Length: 442
Image (cartoon, rainbow, N blue to C red; front, side, top):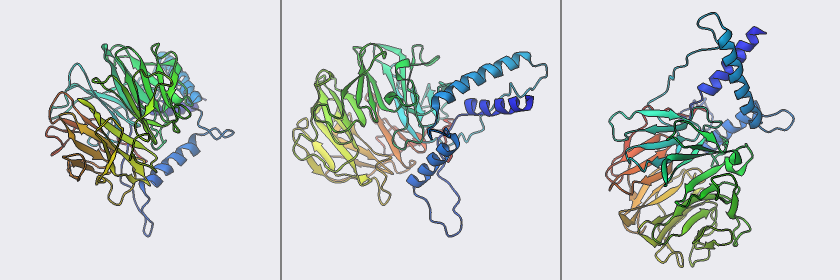
């Protein structure tokens, strides 16, 4: 019985404390076998995880039971540690991270700290939450935060504009579905301690899979969920209301991706799988289409990514997923009333995976210049009449591109190789992933 307890404790501690992780692209191909596609490799990992973790009767992964087991296990291990008389007991091992620490893994979340723009928060899709005090350092020092989050699948990070010590972290990797989230975590002490917001908890809560989270200056919290529409809380996250989604204001999708609040026209903007919407209030029933309702907007897409000029809300740009490749670039110069189809960004080549990695941004210092990301990166210097290569010395598969609105030329790229920084508008890029231990193995 004692041996069984020690074995249980070892496995438990390994799963709780050693849960760093995002991905290695290498695999061994046996003689004569076809190389699996990225989708097949990811699906294989998901299928194996489900097979080894699912409840025998229901076929579902019982995350609530998993979290309860972790808590019970911690209590048992702690109690046993008090009683031990032999040094070096297996109930209190010291774990040391052994890497790899020189290659980051799949990352979607990047946040520039409002108090210090060299202070950067990032999150791996299964590697947890990290922060550095100085992204410009030659040897960046990364600190792991939220070690005991019930999910290490970080999807987005945002800061309360009224109190920069209050941070929200959303979880859930919706684009592959291989790592389920646990809800939204909140810290009121600059990341020292964290609380899982009760209203968002639960493996099957729609707030366990959030693509973007935003806190407005009036205290309202918005969450772009992958299957529950755009949700808003006006009481600090205790209660949530779906303000737009399928069946509301003519919308047919609950899968929301991007969210913006515009400081010039004071409107809220969001996009889902098929459309771009905006609202002056954010209230239920007060959202209007500015994508499909406009003339010339894209069709036959299953995912939309868009950007809006910080100084001029009339200037918008969007691309979409069409059969796993990028659509044309759609540009509007009148707030979405009409759209012009311009050239396709050269971001996929022969590898069509726009379902997986897709993004487009505007340069805040020049809103006629865009950067798009897919397998590779591409830029247009004037409204997508043509596209050319940019940041060619960077890892592939791009999930987030973020311009620093306060520092000219500074751009962050997060991809399957971690976090990268450019200080010259993407002409050259530096890998900042040493010590950002998020490599994902499958």
